[in-house]
Length: 149
Image (tube, rainbow, N blue to C red):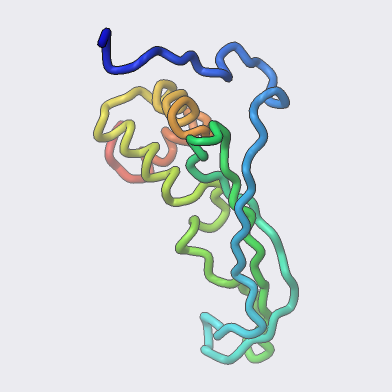
């Protein structure tokens, strides 16, 4: 035996166009409900419409490609308060964030615990987990946590 394993080059190395990267595997999730309790008054609110949102998750390492989670969720209207609100998706991702909690936690861990620079952490996420996160986004996540900077 010569060593622990043979070197396999990254198949995406040298690709400069996003269109040439491997296509994402799409996983479906549903948070579509007919009725939900209003977060303001507790009144039962009916479903007004159904919306979809795409989240980027840690990639499929066996297939060597990214994973996108397509979440179908309901938007509800409370007739008592007159407000609109979405079905709860806090178990998957924060509002207005394009990445799951797993991606955010992995990125912050790479910078805070492993001490990687932001650019290296961004490359590491793509190379090992097939999820592309701009290094400035990782910097915002780390600084929002108050861990570095």
